[in-house]
Structure formats: C-alpha cells, structure tokens
Image (cartoon, rainbow, N blue to C red; front, side):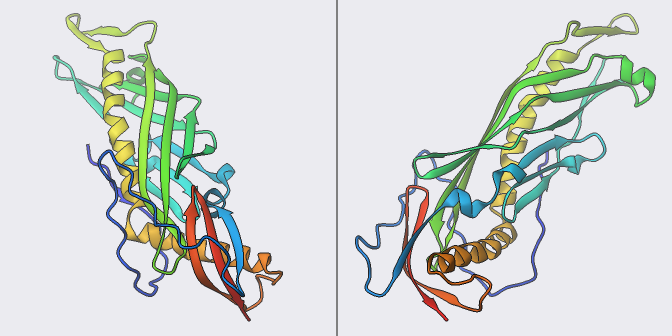
Length: 279
C-alpha cells in the first residue's frame, strides 16, 4: 500500500544545512555535549521546554479516514507540523467474482504530552476507529450486506527527539511512531454469498488494520522529516524562541530587538540558552 506525504510549504528562505540522518537502529544518538556549566558574563539564561516550542497540544489531532478520498487522513502536531497521508481502501475478492470493500474513519483526542528521557512523547488515543464495509457496490444493499466493525484501544505514540541547528536554535532530530490497537469482532463474522462463497469480514478487517499500522507510522514520519516540514517548523519556532528570550529580558517581543545566542544546549527536553538582547 502506498503512503504519500504532503505538507504545506512556506515561501523560499535562505538555504539551511541538511538535516541529520534520521532514525537510528536501536541506539539513541548522543545529545550534543554540554556547552556551558556557568553563566557567561553579560548574558542572560532562559530555559524553555521543547513541548512549549512545539505548540499548544489541545490543537493537535490525528484524523484517519478514506471514505471520500485516500487523502482524508491528516494530522496536526504543533507549529508547522502538519500533513496528509494517502490510505487506500481495502478490497477483498470473493470466489464468486464479487468484491468486499472496507473503509476507515476516526479522529483522535488531543494528545497526552509527557517527556521520556530526551524525547517528547505525544500519545494520541482514538475513542473508536470504524471499519465501514460494503459488498459489491456502494448502494444501500451493499452497505447492509456486511457488518461494520470497530477497533478499540487505538493508540498512536509519537516520540520527538530535539536537537540544535547550526544557529544554536532548537529543532528536531528524529521521529519514532508506534500504532497499537485491536479490531473488535462483530456478533457475526462470516457471511455466505451465492450460497457457497464465504466472507469473514472480521478476518478481513484485522488484516486491513495490520496494513494500516505501518502505513500510518511511515506516512507520518515521512511528512515530518521532509525538508519543507522542517523549514515550516523552524520558521515558526524562531519567533516563539525570540519572544520568550526577549520577554525574559524585559523587552517587548513586538519591538525590533533581536537576540544573540551565545551558547545553548538541551537538558533533557528543555532548551537552555545563554544570550544577549540586541536593540
């Protein structure tokens, strides 16, 4: 099954260094070494949780669907971190030459945001994920020919590992995603057509969900690691960090003042910067 990533792109900006190669195999990449232990004379220090930099989690969601279009699946994680994924319907061919179709629809709750070591964890919970079934065609008769099913305990765990870019500003290094859940069996699973041709819709839905899991994991990861998505995030993140640092210095963020970041590092998932305001 193909997974197609899409993300809105901002107007061109100055070229940035290529992102670090993402995902490692079984071993967490080392964080940058501590750049400072004490204060640098003439500088201010500010700590900003990376979860704050990512944005308001109450506006984050993942919507899974392909009833109207393969691109019904979309997500919003934070500042500039949004996109669409193509999920195809499931088609099962019966022995009588007809086909059964399964579509998906469901929306997550806002994520539970926690920290896990050096990563920020977004945990999205889906109250229900519905598997909508049809037999032969999309008529009323085809709609009622098979049972619809639901998946329970659907959880999408997304881990974001922060790092520093060449300007000592925060960005993200890599993304880890895991999708878990179980398709609940219907009261009736097996249907017979033309007397002798069975269709086990519960088995078909379970097989479909097995295909959906890696498609979601890979699709979301690919969108988030696209250069356009990273550039979009970094453009919005810059103004957030600038505003936090200027406010910490008692300067109105709406002023033309800038900040010179002297040194920076991540302590866990907190971005810590030593800087000088520049009026």
